[in-house]
Image 1: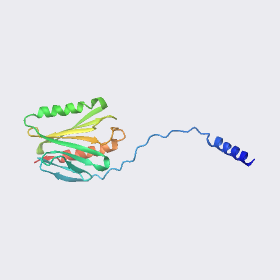
Image 2: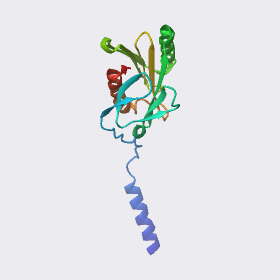
Image 3: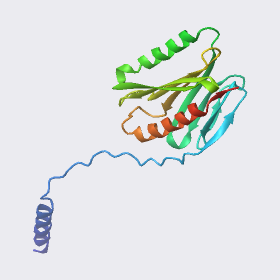
Image 4: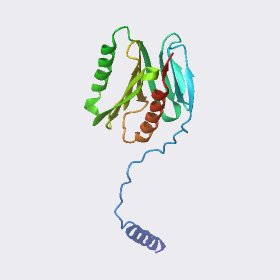
Length: 187
C-alpha cells in the first residue's frame, strides 16, 4: 500500500512539474577581457620603429630578417609583419597586396579602405578592414615611403574565423594598428 502511494505521488509530481515545454538556450560565447590600451616604443635592427601595445610580445622568426609577429597572448591573435625593400618594384608590391585582399572577397561582406599619410615622415599607408563572418584575416595593411621601403601587416586569430563573435577584439586590435601606423617612422 505504501509503495502504491509513493508511485502515485511521484507520478503526480512528475506530471504537474513537467507542464512547461523546454526551451533550448542560445549558444553563448565566453566573455572577452580586453587589455588596457597602453603603448611603448619599439625599435629593432630594421629600418623602422613604431609604438606597440604593452600587452603584446614580439616573436622574431630570424634575428637577421624583418619578418616578425606581434602576439596578443590574452586575445589568441597575432599580427604578422613583413618588411620588403622596394628595389623599384613598388607597383608590384602594391598589386600583390590587392591580390591577397581579393582572395578574401568570397568570404567577406565588404572591404573598407582607410588611407594614412604623413608627408613629414614619408609614411603612406593603406588599411583594409575586411568584414564578414568567415573572412580569415579581418585586417590587412601596408606602409611605404613610395621609394625604398615596404612594410605589411596581417591580423590572424588562432581559431576558426567567426568575426561576429570576435568583433570586439578586432576593433581593439584595429585601434592598436591605427596607433602603430600613426607612430610609424623610417630610420
